[in-house]
Amino acid sequence: MPFLLTMLALFPAWGADFYVKSLKAPLLPEARNGVPPIIQLERGTKVEAGKQEGPFTAVKVAGQSGFVNKLFLTDRPPEAKSSLLKQEIDISTKARRRASGFTSAAAARGLKEDSDAIFKTLGDDADGAAVKKVEAWNVAEAAAADFLGNPDAAIETTP
Amino acid sequence: MIAGLLALTISVTSAQDFRMRAPKVAQLNGATYSAADVKAEIEFGRGLAARILNTYPLVGDVVMQKYVATLGAGLAAQVGRPELTFHFAVIDSPDVNAYACPGGYILLTHGLVKLLANEAELVGVLAHEIAHVNERHVVKKLKLKGKGDSAVDGLGAMIGGATASFRVAIQTLSAEAMKLLFEEGLMASEEVDADKIAIRALHATGHDVNAWVTLLEKLRKNLAAGQAKVLAKTHPKVEDRMQLVHAYLKNNPNAAGRTNEQRFTRYAHP
Image (cartoon, rainbow over all chains, first blue to last red; front, side, top):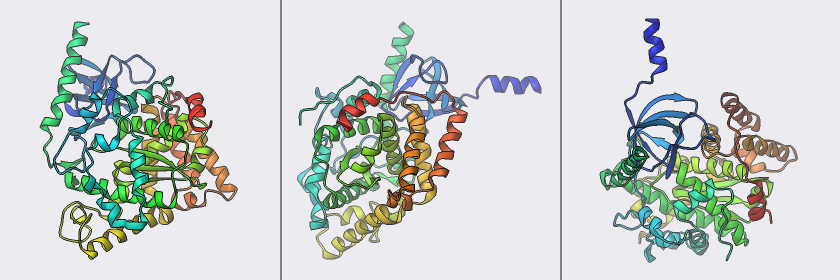
């Protein structure tokens, strides 16, 4: 019995399927930050999860094993971007194709003229133009994630 | 090397496939909300942000705005709800606070940005607000849904609706949301949950978790000086929040990371 318990402690119970929720999740050789990742897993990648080690989860993926921060994982496939268009469009892929890191969020989300309906409904209480300005400052996910992870990265300072 | 390339190819393929597998109108995240609910949430949040911006205009420093927007979008890409496009901006208010509107519209006061000392503290604040959106705290409180027969359930159809009663219903809901954000606040347990996610997000993205301690210490001093009154009213006691982060640091002694003070100073405190 002690032998069995020792074996269970040493070897995680693999089997639960999880999915990468974050745009990128480093697969680390150890359950800690600061070590070079084995590979960067992309959003939607299915992994086989094992035991927890603090904030990290042991995972197996594509014949490799390592650790992923569990904040980057979810127990079901992540959904594609929602938009205000009636037609479902996966805009995240389109945004990534853009050459420039900076892109119009409104364009990326495929907003139409009639997406201003909420502003019309709220009337003088709402500053819709200011919201559109905020949306125009948005950045494609991949470029923004690179900025977050690279302290030397700069932003485009041209107004 | 070959194994690595093979693994990369497989993981990329999996990433491309998942969108095809996801149903068009699915129940998301534990069957609690639908794609129609998400659309209604985005539209409502967009309107709520417009209301806040009607009261507090945007800070005119575009470089700072782009910095906060870029950092926020990067963080949201890593820890936000994948189905949303998050937006971030700084509003011209001396208060020390931040507001998470449904659908991913997050507004920080200039007073808060001035209080921050480095990028890790800013990442902590942004992650806390992203957590409120992820957990749909305002949406749940107001019981917003995209489709249904009642006034609140039928939000998707009501937005832009032609009748006066629709407009009044949306205006009333929006006013309730303003009151929730600016006067009543969310539940203490929801703030604690957002703190927990902020701390974990700092660690997960390689930022210094100690930044959450330094920020809370500054908030405590502010509160003692009689400032940040609204935040004091709408958030749990700083001491309780401090206990959370100290417990995390005790369990994760390697949670120190980067602060990026130089970049923060260049863009946010020029």
